[in-house]
Length: 316
Image 1 (tube, rainbow, N blue to C red):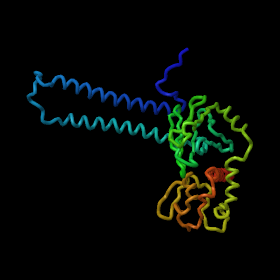
Image 2 (image 1 turned 30 degrees about the vertical axis):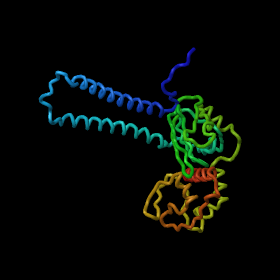
Image 3 (image 1 turned 60 degrees about the horizontal axis):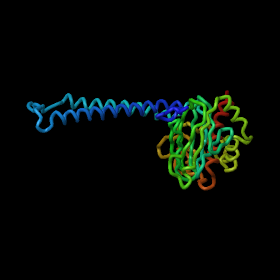
Image 4 (image 1 turned 90 degrees about the horizontal axis):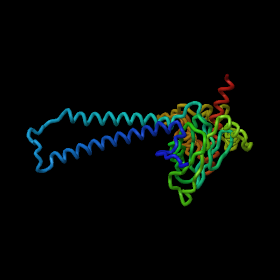
C-alpha cells in the first residue's frame, strides 16, 4: 500500500491547524492578487499593443474611486491578516493556568528536559495529550532552536536568557524534534523526539521514573547552600526583598520602572543583581555569575514558585 501524500506535516498540536489556516489564507490571497494583476497586465498588453485599433481618446485624468479602492482594500486585508496572526502568536507564548511547565536546557549537542517532580530526559520529551505544555528554555553554550514541525512551533534557545513556547498536543504518538539553528559540527545530529501519551499513561510514566528529589526540593537545598535564605527570608535581619509569591508579581524598581517578575527576572537578579534593583533597597547583593549553573537556577526558581503555592495552601 502506497503511503498517503501530505502537503504539510501531520497537525499534532492545537496550534498547528490555526497556523496552517493562516498560511493557506495568505497563500491564496497573495496568489489571487498576483493572478489578477497578471491577467489585467496581459489583457492590457494585448489590447493596447502598438498598431491595435483600441480607442485611445478620452483618457481619464483622475480616478479617485479607483485609487481609494486599491489603497483601502489592501490595507483592510493586511490589517485583518495581521490581527489573525497576532492572536495566534500571543497564544504561543501565553500559558493558561493549567499549563504544565517543563524546563529545557540545550547544549552541544543534546536536549535535556526536566519535569517538576525531578524526572529528567535527554533527547526526548514526554507530554500528556490535551494539556497545555509550557517549555522554559535556555542554552548552556550557543544559540539553538527548538523546532517540532508537527506542532508548528519553533523557538530560539539563547544562552544567557530564558525563552518559552506553549503548545497543546492533540494526537498521541512520537514526533521529531530538531535544532533549527546551526550550532556547531554535530548540529545535524542534535535530534530528539516528543512522545505524546494519554494522560493516565503519562502520569504513570512520570511517577515510575528514577526516584530523586523534585526541582523544588533541590531548589530549597540550593537556596540554603548559596545563602539566599540569610537575606531573603521574612525573618532575616538583612534588608532584602521577600521572595514569597514573587513570580507573577508586579515589581517597582529604583529607577522608576515597573515589571512583572518572571523566570528571566529571577535569573538576572541572581547573575546581575545591579540590573533591576527593587525600589527601597540598596544594591548590596553579590553576583553569582560563574558560580551557579543553569540547572541550579531553574531549581531555585521552581522552589520560589512552589513556596508561594505552599503558603496559599496553608492559609486555606
